[in-house]
Every structure is written in C-alpha cells, then in structure tokens.
Image (cartoon, rainbow, N blue to C red):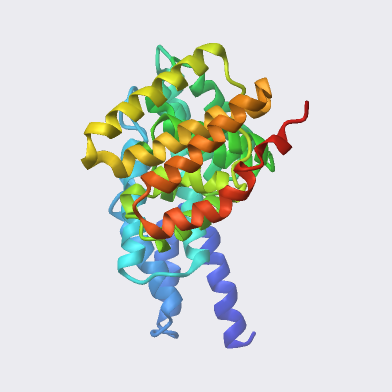
Length: 333
C-alpha cells in the first residue's frame, strides 16, 4: 500500500471513530501516524479537537434527572469559538465531532424530557434545534410545533426561527415564510441572525449592512427588505383579535415616534413592517381597494419622510414605489 493511500485511509478511520465519540482511540491512532507525518495539519486539528473534548467528557452523560444537556450545548459553542481562534477549517473533522456531540445531546435531552413531570418548553426548543442539526427535519418540525402550542408568548421568537429553518430544509418555503414573518413581527430584537440558516435572509442581512445599518438593527429591517425583494411572501391569516392588536401596535408606534427620537432607528422599521402586515390583510383577506391604496400610500410616505439613511430610503423607494403606486393591480376582485 502506498504511503499516501495509507494516510488517507487512516484519516477516514479517524473521522469514523470521532463521529462515534471514541476519543481515546482517535488520539492513540493519530499520534501513531504522526510519527511518520509530523507536519500534517489535518492530524494536528484532529488531535486538538480530541484534546478539547476529552477535557469535557463529563458533559456527555446525564448528571441530574431534571437538568442536563444545557452545559453540553454551551460547550459546543465554546468549541465553535475554539475552532475560529485556532484557524481550524477542516469540515470532515468538524462534521464528525458535531455528529457525535449532537447525538449525545439528543439522547440526554430526550431522557430529561421523559423524566420531567410536565412539558418543558425550554428542552423542546433545544431538542428541535438538535434534530435540525442532525438532519432529522420531520422530528424537528414535530417537536417545535408542539413547543409552540404550549402557552404562546413573546419569548417564542426562537421557536418561530427554528421552525422557519426546518420548513425551509423540508422544501416548505411558504410555511417557512410564515414562521419567519411571525418572528420578525413579534420582536426582532430577540432574533439571533446567525441562527437563521435560510440563505435568502442571510443575503438580505448582508445587503442591509452595505446600506449603513448597524449590526444590532439588521433584524429590524429584514422584514421590510424581505417584502421589497419578495423574499418572505407569506404571512399567516389574521384573526380579528390579531388585527385589533396590529392596529393598536400601529397607533402606539406612531405616537411613540413623535416624542422618542432616540429610538427612531428601531421604531420606523417596526412601523413600516406593521403597515406591511395591514397591507397584506387588505390584499389577501378583504381585498378592499380604497383601504389597500391608503395603506400603500402610508408606507411610501413613511419611507420617504421617516428614513434618514439615504441609501436605505433610496433602495426601498426604488423597489417599492412602482408596485405600491399601482397596488390595485394585485386585487383580484
């Protein structure tokens, strides 16, 4: 067997062992072959990964009947930082250890949930994310939808984001759009953009950044840009209760903008998004021509007079003005 072939086959065996969590075996075999290849960067990364996780092996086991998994999940994000700090880029190493860590995390969370005397929304949220990471999309959707059914509140933003990711992975882009729109409506400030795996939203975030919007405000503008670019086309059908809350939100935002100039960078995109929801209601549910036109004019007026970043205002007007000025074309009856 040639030397190169032997090295390749050994590395493949190491990846397999790493995905099974056999850290001692990986370490032993990697050290043995490094005597022949002392400068091999891939072997160095494998050993560094093993070293990182061998110092955290206690997290691979359930320590408490009521709590577990959270520490391991936190350690995973520390590992992500560790990789970046050390310039580790090998995807095979990354995917192998990720499969093992998340498989263990799944087992721990399922056991903790099974032992809990009542439904644990926090566990379901993490479990849904773990299922998605492992490619178990159907189980992720089932878990997250169940979590969403338990006492809905404003803290459900992350569940909507993960559901959006899962539906997008399943090819259900309309449902993904509904979930993302819900999240951005409820509270954009709670959204961790790095958790969104849907490429069109990530591209929008990069575009908005080029227009001078601060990083902490990107999530505020994404639903507005998404409407302008036709990225998130679908919203859920509104009940009268939701509609009443929407109108109250618009009133509060308009009043707050008048006296709270310090928060205007947040309030303006939220007001535009609220009016976009109202526009969607008239377009899709009432199809009332006069109301639709009035809302469209209001949106253009806010964009023209309320946005102080020239690049943002110019871009949105270029995208939206032609369509909103002829909004009656979208009314089918």
